[in-house]
Image 1 (tube, helix red, strand yellow):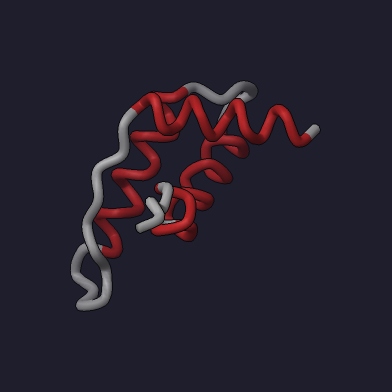
Image 2: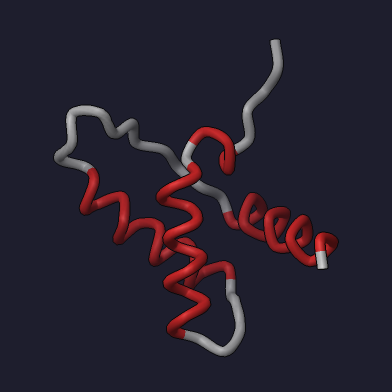
Length: 71
């Protein structure tokens, strides 16, 4: 059984959080992405189709490393 990462299972909320953080700050910080992600999750929480999830700081750091390698 393959394990799906957070980016595959919740791409919209995660990428919106990273985009908002990028627009509002000169540099990315893990806590800012987590904060924005929580704000977005709160907006979607009332939807019947939204599945709540928890995101750890290490997951954000790994995503930053992955995107840095793509440059």
